[in-house]
Image: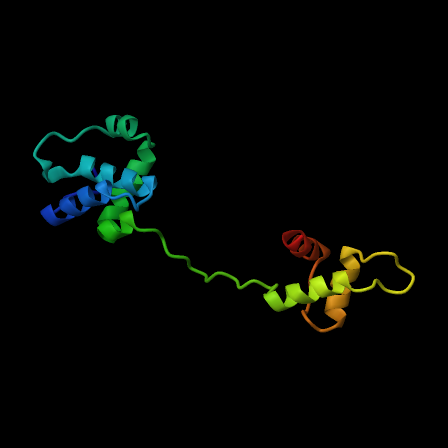
Length: 148
């Protein structure tokens, strides 16, 4: 006996078929749409087994079970859409202004007694100038590598 049932309305079925014809959705999203169409109990024929759906769609039985459960709890939008992030993305610490100071420091004359700037020396100079609170020598290296 199945715990979660998939009963698609005519509108939902049309929406899934349109979703499958579109080229703007990911293969993962289309795979879940196929699973829902296979699991639809209103289609009037005997439902395929989990193993047959798994083999036909190239997914595990757990994926089928989770898709079925997600449809019942979140609806069609929950299955086809992506999950939203709980935390917002962290803004980049190195902005264009910081990059400009790193490049300017690198292009300037090295401190007295040194032949060239090292990554750590550039990082220390940027911090001492008050441009940024903290920066690693690896970040300086990546900025300079990006800018050649």
